[in-house]
Length: 324
View (cartoon, rainbow, N blue to C red):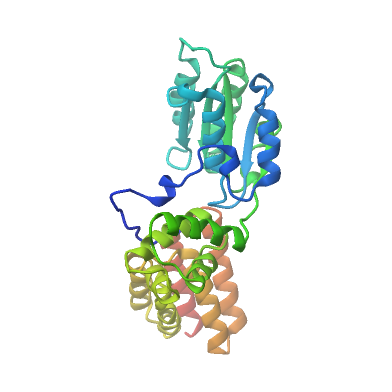
């Protein structure tokens, strides 16, 4: 996963949390899904387990938390368990935390407990198999809300036990409208070009957009130049240099510059590859197709979960070999 820009922490804390929706009607853009969910929770006893999928920052976790608040009311904090499966991917997490919570006795007047499992697609197959058993065993007193970026990585027996909802990317107009609302409340000056730059960089990920706007606010107004500076986009030309250095055979030097861009300037690994791909076309290199195939191979490896720093270093080493 990419490293997001450093976020300014003010007395009010992180804006992404401060302005997180508290009820379903406040969730941005997912109108059809929200309508279906509101109908489902009118009589919570009939609510099935839920599976939310879609790209990052489009409202999946916020929607799950809103459901918990609306069904459990004042008991939401005590009777909701929220876990991030990517932090605790193994069988132990399923057995210990989920099972312990699902067996916890002494329920008040609520229809069921709610377990929100974020990044469920990062769980191992063994952990998912164990989870399936717990879902079955605790159906009388628990409802699960599973959240995944990639639903195809969730085993079929779990998918078949859930009502599935696919969240879509948030359109530019809706992202900019939400950013304008937040900027107004925070008394931050924001111009249209600056907000458009935030949208272009975040690509429909509202969480990333809000974080980037907060980071940019520490530089003054939300202008195009400030957004570029905050996001590390001014360093795009340095990606061209990484390519040239790698192709000249200097792997260690290329790697050092790449690590600096990612760790110091906050450029995400996916953006690094995207800009590297553009740099290849600009270079008009003789071995254009070979270089592109190398980049595509390592992009895929990172996508399926390999360690990004190791893979990017290996990619630079392979690019260096092309000229030898």
